[in-house]
Image 1 (cartoon, rainbow, N blue to C red):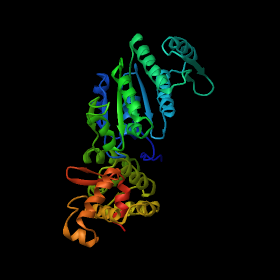
Image 2 (image 1 turned 30 degrees about the vertical axis):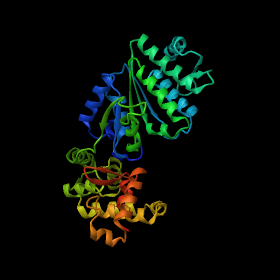
Image 3 (image 1 turned 60 degrees about the horizontal axis):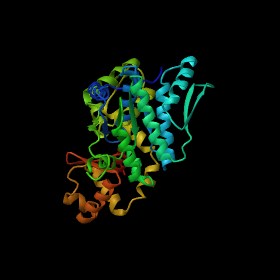
Image 4 (image 1 turned 90 degrees about the vertical axis):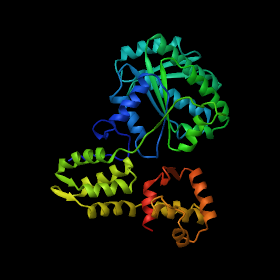
Length: 376
């Protein structure tokens, strides 16, 4: 029987869990051409939400591009990634070679200083190859040509850029930010979704008045999928193997993982794979599966060793206290760390994006790291 849970890729359709309210909110912003700054802790499902909306929830006339710039390190690579996204959005789901050939001819008037090429071997691919040697100018011409094409053909588009905070690390980042702001401000029939896993850096781009992207979109915090919604969804899929997951068992998994979508899917995947049909997943069985997964994380010992002693103790305290009351005298004494050292270590860990604070609670970006620390 095919496993109904996926944890290692972006998902949509039958593998996507709920989020009807989020889908409705984000879709409404897209249809009204409003820019979004979407943030959340890692592995909650930002990319999967965007994929589900782009593939299954938008009107087919809306062009979409979903671009991950995590791996870029210079302006050329930024240009290439954004160009590929725009090329893909123009082709979209079109497979007719005649229509693609016609499209490649039509867009020549919009993309100046560019050679337009249609590749038909394998999956049809449209290429917009700029002859401009200055990548800043090439990027500007690419987007202005795209906006002109949308306006002339009465089309709409949405461009999602994952790990957008990466532009801060590039050479001449201020120049890049200023250029992209100008492009975004001059958009026609188009909106942007900016997401990132390093929330502090991402929000600094949009919330600081001295940055070009100041207030250039609506902030949208993506929360964890609600307990009842998630429990109903996973229970329905386990019924395919006539497995019942006890509510107490799933509550333990949900709370231990801070509602992290990926980890819950991972544990569910392993249970579906190994648990006998016609059985009940009790709390004890759930704990055993979580322990099995965490015990395999041998690399986390190496990761822990990269931190200072004070940071290691701080991380352990956050893990065992579940992120609350971390400065209690008993905890600080048990881990032999001074309050001042604890405060300094916490600040550095938050600056690095290892932990973050929500509603007076310190949480880990990597929930598996937290669960491993609780067990050492």
